[in-house]
Image (cartoon, rainbow over all chains, first blue to last red):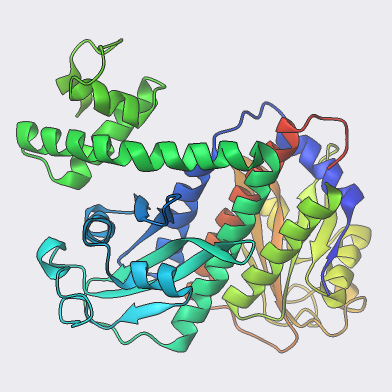
Length: 242
Length: 157
């Protein structure tokens, strides 16, 4: 039986609200996934969310290798996280490169993505996405691992519930959809910067985010301008992104 | 709306206690007068622990807030400085406590307590895990604060 004191909560929330402007659910989710990475000591973590047609697309990954895992599953429409979403249950693999359940994945994966675990993220009891983690070595997942991931996914669900209260469901869905849509543009901009400046994907992404933050703009907007898909605004030299 | 925010916090506290493998979790937050106030806990023992610290003005959470650092107590009932017997007397079943300061930006906003009914030595890995869960709680509180900001500041949650 939990106990919350509403009066004390109100008093503290007033303090927290000072000078606060909403930063959006996607930003919070990114930070939460970065924490899960350090909490469990895995090699990386990520989030995938489903579109209206129940196609799973990737929203965020903590590093380049994790991005390859989520991108590969989105392209092939198969993999441990897709299975976790479809079956509404935890799905693990000791070594995804050797797993006969998903023969098409290894060709698209970063070679250091080996052991993978995915658990569903639910809203109202229905899966809406997955929390994914990976190890860079084969790993025999224990039940305690998946229990901890379920518990963490439950906290993510609570954050989504709170955001829905704030934003109304449609706005939340729009924010997630926007993030899903613009991942493609961001990926292409990362590829452009990697080729032009001989960078790793991680370096390119970090540079892109830093430039966006410094200029108080969205990463997707800057990425689109880099690719010439939008009229350049306030970007004297796009190559200075990195 | 009170019940919505309260239920989110309840669920998060329960989830964090499960994640950490401890008997319970409790939250204290600074109010507008910079006083640590007991906000919620996963069970009666957590409520007792937080209420005792609030009324006595001492305890692991108070010390954590004062120093802005983790405070790990193996046995709350031990004599000072190893324990806080004057707090423990109000929360008899609680023995071990890990108090994690909650920091938003560079500002302390509260303390998250994890506790166990058996004596427990908190090692460095558990301290790191506690810090991560503290970061997670700050994010949850930010989301809840934004929720309330967008709904207006009429004092209602």
